[in-house]
Length: 412
Length: 66
Image (cartoon, rainbow over all chains, first blue to last red; front, side):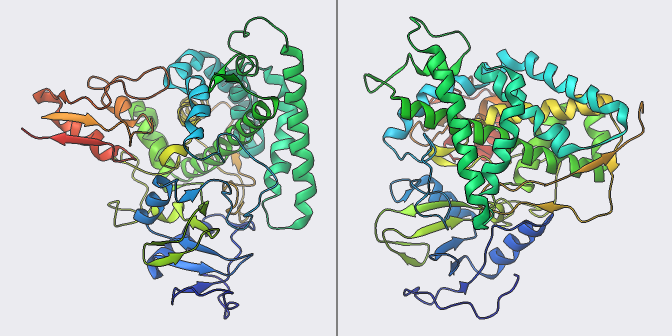
């Protein structure tokens, strides 16, 4: 653990629970967050962190799973433990049961395996074009030139809006997630980015208003024609839904792609295995999601006083389930701290768990699989293009590499 | 052996029908079609059934040995 110089006393009784004072949000050298998660998990199952207003941190698989699976006690009203009163409200992310499922039922078919099968040729074509664009140069910053661009275009394609609008969305997504850094200077760009995204959808909805039927394959138009609880969705609901989809869909896959390709750059034996045995690509992707979990932790707000895994929680408390620690918990995984490319029985929580499990999981998997297949087809050998320390964004939003320079022999 | 998926626990992660497509199919929302219904596991699929039960992130799959 870093900087554990006598933390401030908690302003409340924590019943003898170990206390820490740790800001999890700043950028750190790559790998820092998983090492920290491991140290915390090994030293204690639970902590009280006096950072911000103070919140509980649970480090082991069972507690993290139980937080996810008990939404009546652990509300999603806030999912960032140091921001108990967020300036945004996302549907369905921050909606609790029983209303949550009503919104999910509207969205689930758009992100189902069948929908992904239908979009799969388009997704592959986007990926192929981007790989072929960078291949001749012999090097690129993988994060900005591929890992953010590919999921953005693929996602806009699934939503049925022009993929060239990726040029608008990419900077908005960067500024929005910059707002979680803990630095107050990031809050204004965050709010502006949110306005930009909302204005985009306000305009998209205005263009579609009054049409007698939903445009095929157009999610914004579809939302204007569905009923939830026997009524149409309000504009505010549609905006909240479309906005969170963009934020969740573009940033997360970028994060996982960065870690996956850093791993492949450093492990030629794994590149070879995936080329020779392409049937391993789906298992390798699952292992990336477990081992390189980008959810450092997931926050929830406690709805009533309750004893939970040995501590007394009070209504209004925030909790943080360290998913990154749980996914490498040796109590649940053999060779937990090893990347096992053909791991079977991999019940990781890389897409969260319980009713809020990631809506876009099937899209994310598809994108990761296609990225590996198409990249290795054109660029079978590549390595890190720098000796400099790579940095990763901290918890609060999803973890992601800020840059990943890769190099290869053009035409290899 | 029989296999049951508890609909109250299943969240549609899709690991089961991905890894055992001969046993389990998925619906239009991405959930397995056979929820709350004990299906017979053919003898040559027992290992596959054990794998998917252990892979389910929600622990929604139970196996009933006869």
